[in-house]
Length: 161
Image (tube, rainbow, N blue to C red; front, top):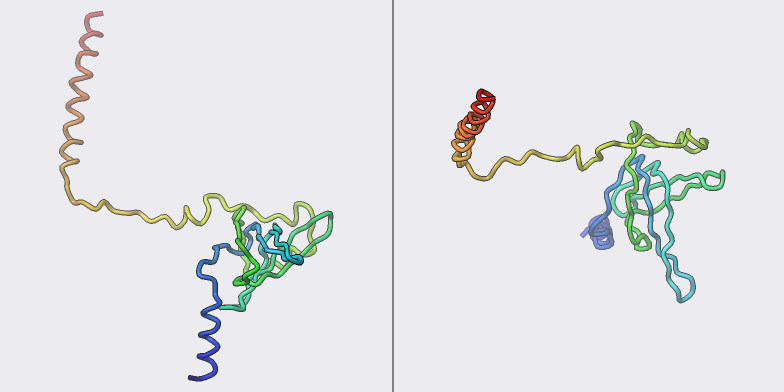
């Protein structure tokens, strides 16, 4: 075995099985586990994802937020055991891979447009019916006759009044 294959095996064992899906421009809440002495607590960092870098075990993402008038930025390793979960609050509509231009902005200028409908709505696939039974078409063709018979008494009532 070569060194590269041994390293790949080690990295593969340390990768998270399920990584939460998010994209650049999304507003996310990152739940990080903080260990202080013997106590452990979860701290939440909310912000806009401005970059994703790397692949495999060394993949990272940067989150930017403005708090108390100061811009803050934090880089998280995606497969870190300290991250308990990543929650997508709002999906952003952006046309860039890196949003470094948000660093110097404050107020409305630091906002990212919201994606309406979301990625799940865009990824919906039409599923064809599993049965090829066309008996429903016969039922549909008989319904107009039922409507005509139902509308006939109404027209008769109108004729008498």
